Length: 216
Image (cartoon, rainbow, N blue to C red):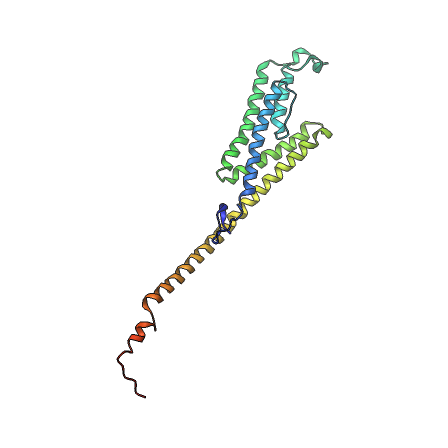
């Protein structure tokens, strides 16, 4: 078995043991990209929404838009105009949402450098985001896909973390095995080379008997 997707000694290709870890990293990037896209589409009232997105940043921007009076008038029935805030409140919520998305981006950058702590941090963030989804919204059938997506990302991150530690645990054992195999091959080669040069009991030994009388 070779780590990091190298070839085995017999030339056969082996599967990269970090493949699942890399998939977890890729999922973090998807969360970053689609969360940012969803924020932009929400702020521009496009009416579209992507599943690969964190819920809490989206909710914060939605909250800021509502209390800044950015929705149609029928959304504010029973709410006094004096209860609404100016556009600066919306700007603050945008900043907060961007910071939260950037936190995922930082996790992705460090996870790419094999910093498993960043992957663990992303897992914690997304678990909080999942709990927030149930707390902030009245869950209906419309949220089925969001729930499935969040569960899938959490499982993917857990698998990536477990894979990382399994491979790290196997590395010392494999390193020792490779060293042993290298030492064994070196010893075997030395023995073969030594026998060919010293020629024990070979032609040199035969030559030593030349000119010797053997009495019968």
